[in-house]
Image 1 (cartoon, rainbow, N blue to C red):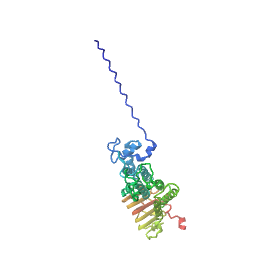
Image 2 (cartoon, one colour):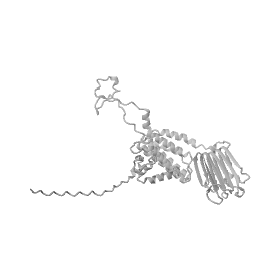
Image 3 (cartoon, one colour):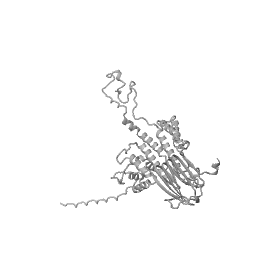
Image 4 (cartoon, helix red, strand yellow):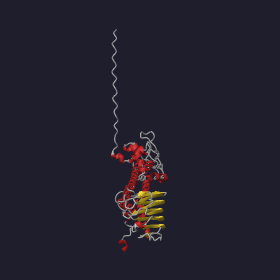
Length: 432
């Protein structure tokens, strides 16, 4: 018996070369939808150092996490913009695998609040870049609180309690077994789809939210942001009353629109708040004669006092007409507990300024601006014949100025500074 040879085994196919996974770039709509942000954890490829905010932002925008971390740290030193973005994302954005952050809000509200925080950070960054940080924080905070309340109104309402749950229908119950007095308090025993004219209609489901409230808040935030940007960039003078006036115009327009389309619930209350705030911000403290405001325009050194002190009020000292050669190292002390100090110095004089803010306020000394909470000291020296100033105090200065305030503002301008025009005593003003 002949045994046939064994058939050779088929060759083992070689595995195909690994195909590099093609990464899909996020679309523009996905990038704009900040509600899809998720903070990373320690197990995420992007890593986590503090709260996972930088890693989550890097993953959402498909950039290097190291770049995001560096940008956030650098932005902290420019108006605190990096801190604003980080804190807002920390409290609003959930971690991987979670639905809510530290403050539970829905995806649309989270997207709106994150964009508002980004806008505030941008305004703060631009304001610091232009050398002025007078940002309308109060009105921005009011809009943030209102937006937060609007986003959580449903959850807070459920925590306070709601209507009792509807009792479940019993299939064994018929209209013949129930007394006539109770037929309207029990559900209909008929199968789904049938109609019982004797059963009152019960409104079920979540109440439809106002259509125009969120849009009005978004427009109001945009208008206030634009006014703040124009103010901090010194493109045009924006009075304090412009902010409530703009809010009143926005809310009034949406109330009129709500009468014809949609519902603008809640805007009446916000409009009343803006209406009350409008006359309060239009009050000029200088209109009240407190007896402590000082305005002086000395033309000679002999007419210049060695110190000016007020408890609450405004001090305006215009020294533009004084001959710089006659100053001869003069010391000048100006003190205010609550108010604004404005000093105009000659262009051809070397002036050293030490501005001390005790608690809260802003100091504008020549080309340098600083504002802070808790007090600070700003020292600058303007050299005769030169533009701007340099840090520190010159020992051979023609005038040594010390300005101190607890709450308020300190302004020291050169005679040629455009900001000093309305304080300088010109001949035309003297004739009037």
